[in-house]
Image (tube, rainbow, N blue to C red; front, side, top):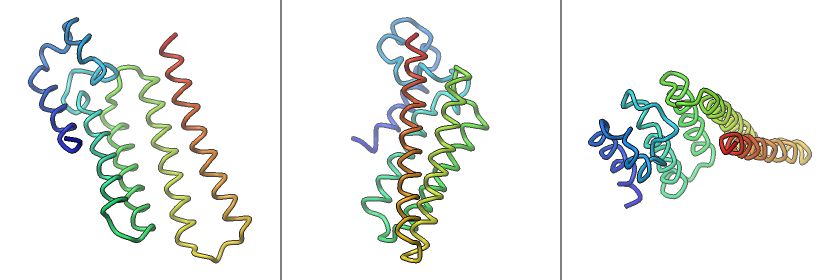
Length: 157
């Protein structure tokens, strides 16, 4: 069911593409597509792509390789792909939403890169440097949370 959900959303959006503007459709299913432009499939299906990326992350972490560095490298690759997709297709209806998304993806990429540096260094870093990297990543997560909640409160008016 979890793996099929993104596919179901894509098929649903494709089948009902011409009706997505109707008030009843917006009321019932608007949360799936409300933030995104409805002109092109590449824009409307951004949520599906986002969910697929999450599934890939989960599969890599749970069933994937045992090397933490390879897991983080996959994380970097997926974050860069997501960032590129967002930058190229600009799927968000609201320009600020698109910018928040790009900033968020950039922060996620920076976090993954710092984790890759941390993991690849092994035990050669001092305890203070390791703690600094940990605090840096914690600060990035806090920035992401504040940024996204700030955007939500902005939307709520």
